[in-house]
Length: 169
Image (cartoon, rainbow, N blue to C red):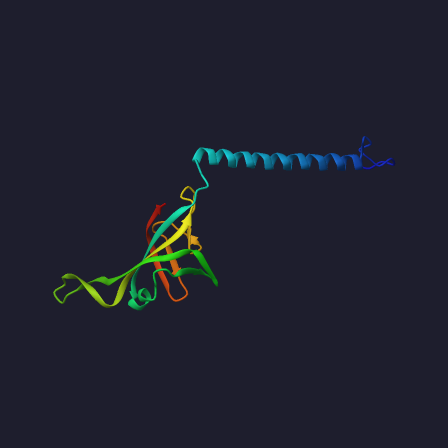
């Protein structure tokens, strides 16, 4: 491949070839970066994404939990992720109701009753989000109606399902 003069196939100097390949790689990389930047700009224009942050209220409902869990959620408590206290996410409302459960009577009739110990706990959490984002987060997790999430403060932890998301200014 290399001849006595250091040329590849007798026509191209190896150093010149290396420089040409290096310049081609730089041009291709710059083109890819430019195309990606253009695509993301076009996508944000099409979707109308603005950088406005508003208040998001997420309702999480835990069913069949012990009542003490709900009693330990205090309005005004901030949420915790790992060992980090989230200053922009806080509990704004808590409701505790009897857990409704179906059972069969001796006659085979289906009856709805209030469970004596278990409760339905509903916690409303306030956070800041851009409503135009594709993905919202609460307590570090994806916030979508129907998702199972953990809501954790310094004192309490609730595993529940997101039942509502609202944005208010």
